[in-house]
Each structure stands twice: as C-alpha cells, then as structure tokens.
Length: 316
Image (cartoon, rainbow, N blue to C red; front, side, top):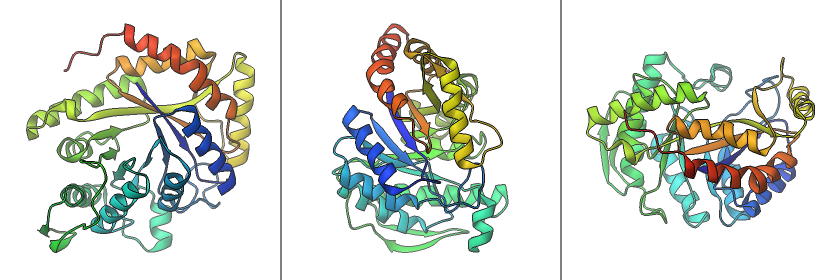
C-alpha cells in the first residue's frame, strides 16, 4: 500500500511546510499533497491559507522522489484547459511526479466571496463531467473541439507535454451517482477520506460504474486516508490533537487513528481489506514530526507485512 502525507496549508508558514515536505521526501513517503482553497476550511474559516498550485510547484523544486498532487482542485477555480496546462508544466518541473487532483467544488464561502459561480449540486456535477472530459483529452495530447453547456473549445491543445506517458488524474469526492461515474470514465485514482466500511461500499459502486462505461476497474486506484497520531501513550496523542484544534480554532479535535505502530498499522490495513490501495495521512500545524517519522520508520514496515499477509478483496 502506498503511503502519502497531506500537509494542511492553512494557519502555517512556508518555512514550516517546506521543512516537512523535505522530511517526507527524505523518509520515502510515496506522495505529498496540498489542497486548493483560498480560505481556511477547518475551524475559523477567516484565516490565511496558501494557494495550492504555488505550493505544488515549490514542492516539486525542493524534493526529488515523492509524487506531488492536490486534494483537490475545484473545476470552478480555473478553466479546464488552463488547469491541464498547469498540470503538464508541474509534471516537467517535478521530472514526472505530478498527479492532477480535481473535483466538482463545494466551498460556498470562498466562491461567494470571490464571485465564482458554484451552482446547484446538479450543475456542479454537470460542469465537472464536462471539465474532466476536457482535461483528460488535453493532458493525453489530443486536439480538442468541444461545445458544452459550460465550456467551448476550438482546436485546443496543451503543447507542453508531460514527462509521464500518462499523467495520472485523481478525482476526489464520494457522490455515488455522478462523481463516481465521472471517475470511472476519466480517473486513474479516486480518493475519499472515509471509514473502511464506507470505502468498501463506494469502491463497489465505482466498479459498477466502470462496468457500465466499459472501463477496467483495475485501472483506477482507490485512495483513502485519515488523521494519524503515532504515540504509545493515548493521552499524548490526544494532547497533540488538542494542540491542532487550538491552532485552527476548531470546536473539537480531529477524529484520528491513534496508537502505537502495531495498532496504527492494523487500522490502516483495515482500509486495504476494504479495497484501498493508497493511504494519505493528514497533518496540520503544529505539524507532528514524531508521527511523520514513526509512520515511515515503524508503522510502514509493519503495514507492509500485514498487507502481504492479507489477500486482496475479491472484485464485487
């Protein structure tokens, strides 16, 4: 199972994020993630948050091995052709380590403040289906002429080609009728932060959508994730989560997987048993260097053992 790190870009500093990005790369994590928002999205919303695409490019420049992506870029924030251009450029900056994470959008506060149309849930899904189709074709090197409800393109191309033969697209979101169907058509990875039980149900639905659109479900990698605090003493783990809540003005600490290395590895393996192939761990200021270090050095070896002992779920 691949293991990634999501560093929240809210209520922090670039030097702090830079330090942990370099640490994640040195420790051998598979992926490094940011998000694409303009306001803080947890706790006190009216607090600073770094812009995600600038952070991704900076990560690409200061790391060597880790894959880099966004959870996720709202299709409402940038025209799909512009976003496709940004992704292929990032793939070049990173020497072929970019993952293009996209979603339909949801945050009404920042959309209203910036005068960006969010639309009804149906409109968001329709717009996202159009945008994902356009992005898939452009990053794959096709010349696109498209006339839809939301987008018009005439002989559009992305002329900066990615380093990767197929630049991976990650689609984030759990909408079972529309988002998962769009993922079945265009995604290489699908992501949600849900329990193993919920992930298992949604993966089964994703597989059915793949069958309906004529896609091999094995071509899409389901990615899960959670907060994780690695401590032998549960009280120490709760103290760390309380510090995060205080830093961000949260009404309660985040829900998290907590425990020693063996316990944490077992809880992550439950996601593998549900059909998840990758796991992204959330961290926010004050960043938990102890957990980052112990995930790499203590949890990951045990996780590898457990996964090797656990048969992959039968396709449903």
